[in-house]
Length: 268
Length: 260
Image 1 (tube, each protein chain N blue to C red):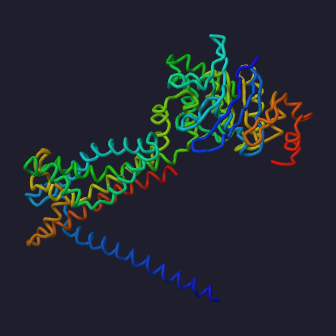
Image 2: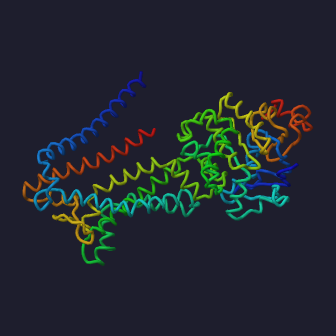
Image 3: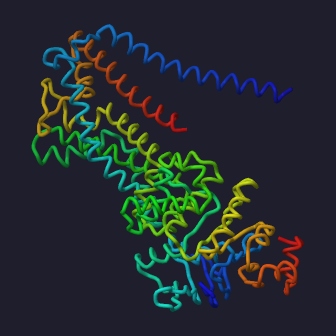
């Protein structure tokens, strides 16, 4: 009898917590959709911010995240391969721990670091600085994904490759990575989704720009930093634009995340 | 004739105080099947894994004694424990292949699986690759089942078919010795029967060493049997002698099921 009562209480409490958590999430999303959609207009995709559009910001955000991926994905993957396949004992563990610590480093600190490292010496903010900051955020995520996905590949598969006379790197590149391909790709996609919406690392590295540009040596347009600027603007029209931008950014991140989930599910 | 001669061989895993194999002396006869039997932890897999030095994937192992492999070109026995260079390891593993407990198909097509070792060995000629893949699959009794889907992924095969594919892959590079580490323990009786028949067929061309938990299997297919216990080789003889007239009491106790 007593156990049944406790069971019911625990069930009720956990259901309540779950509903509460989801309610806040729904609240955020609904507010975002209502406010965002009311200021949403297709012309936002055609005009740049200087003409009250978001085109340059969306393109800029993707270029920043894309550049970060070009730097971060290879570095992270190679490091992940090293600690899982080549690293032995202490060294591999030190790198693994450092990477885990880096993953939880506050993003504003990474922004400040790149500010000191790139922005101060060059004298001005730039798209490159922003990309580097995002890449630093991305690297530990890619390391950790690569590491854990490679660890799921059965050891026998490596031994089978070696037993056929393949060298270690052949086994890693022909067999092990191929087996872990889907997992690694999904992880990279989620890492991309993680950095594509970041604000803090860009705030004082790339800043943002009202104009369309592809010149990464100058301040670079970014959706997230502009949302920050627009949301604190006195004009109502700017704040409406911030809602629309937030809506678009959220949908982008959501779509990338769902694609990642979809790939994993299809594979299983 | 003896293809591989293991002499006073001891093996210690990294970090272990005691050797896992102690002073083993054992011949592996050419074109015969040698079965290694014994209870879990007796070192039979450790011994098998020393024969192509797959242990060396992990650092810190200690080898003592000799494992000599007959070299067909120089007509001399060469100690494989002396091998240090990567290319010598590759050469050794092309001569001494291995099949594992669980099937290990690579994530590629059936054709590419069988061709993998051949490509590693430097065979690039397409028609030669095709011939050797076909022959290996025929030799592994898999050709009829897969000849119309060679381009399909090997992951779609059944467990028994996957294991025969792994055998085909190992056979394709024409090894002198094939090591089987409990190759049928993850398979159903019908697939097991198919693989046992295959092993007996293969020994015309290839020498076989097999670790098995299944004593009926050892008595059915092997020519020689080695009984091991706690890192020692207790008895080695022709299979019928081991099973009908074992000299050692421990062997008799084990094969009659009194322990193990």
